[in-house]
Length: 388
Image 1 (spheres, rainbow, N blue to C red):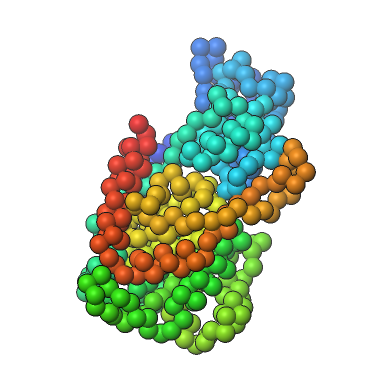
Image 2: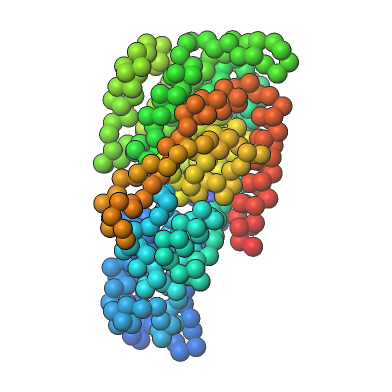
């Protein structure tokens, strides 16, 4: 993106491996192939290709090898793949087994899904995602609402006027902001998020019973940073429809809810985490979900569905994984048995609501889980830790 500025070390690494055209990633003529004593590793990671998808420029090479993994040209093929549902379709399984020497998945959730779907176990290896500690860390966050108002004011500037105004309205700890980051698509379950937020906090002020026995009136808000996709519905229209169905006062709703779909500069994203008091995403399923990890790394109480790749680093000791039941997921793919299509999670909205109320109280337990999340992410999911 035009607004994305990589750290200098990352930019140098990218410059050393970037090519102009996709087909340049693999030599197109025999004299360019690896020598007899060489072995090249080719990692294919392209979401648009699907699980174990094969880039078009590799088709010729695969055909020459009979469509089977081979090191006859010194090529070791790796697919970096993930999925957000509980099983793979037959075409994906066939491609993993026939076209790759290894399949790298991000979590134990995926190891189970891939192996039970029929991908050969010896192909599967787990390689987690990582988070940058210089950008997302627990020393520069509101940390469950503990940042002083003056500190908030000095760090919260994104360059987007509507967003900055919304952030600036959180003048003290009597304002509590839930943050959610996601693409606007059905899988992210935006409807459950909107419905649960408004049903849990329908009034301008919410009376909260604190751990010490006192009560406080809080203004509870929802900030959504999203992306409207070519195939998705309109976030603003969808939100208005949900609020209308709930009988909500739309004027009041606009005071306590903000949806930002404009592109933000890369440096504004950590500001979103630092401006919030908690993170919530009742997703149907995730491959990994970097926003959940970034929120935990930034010291936010984090609530998300307990299904998918995020279960690799979420647990009841460091976050709020919400219960669910499995339900059919949209699919146009073929499966081995009729009616055996993929499933994803339908979040338990009552538990979701309970979790949102729990983090609102900023109790000792909430602070303890946040601290544990900071330790867990720092120790296991920083780049140096993942590289080991």
